[in-house]
Image 1 (cartoon, rainbow, N blue to C red):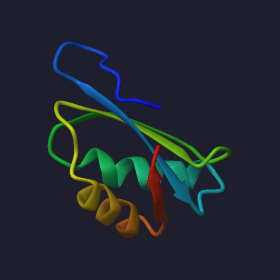
Image 2: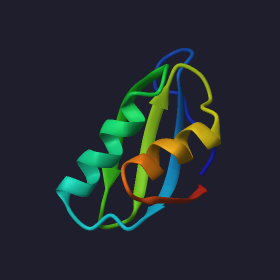
Image 3: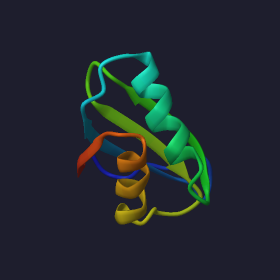
Image 4: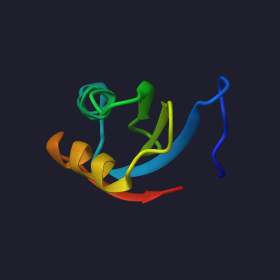
Length: 79
């Protein structure tokens, strides 16, 4: 999937995260990623392991990885 824009100047990225199994997991991952500068929305889906992030600019993948690690999960890839 390629980056998409929701509003002018925003960037949408989708990440694959392993280990999420429930709504609590989704909330933990979403909460950590939403604290990154420039992030306007995060949607984590445990059933697919996909996390969609909308931000003002492209995010540093290592920053996203650190946020996912902090939540107790593993960032597998940007898709």
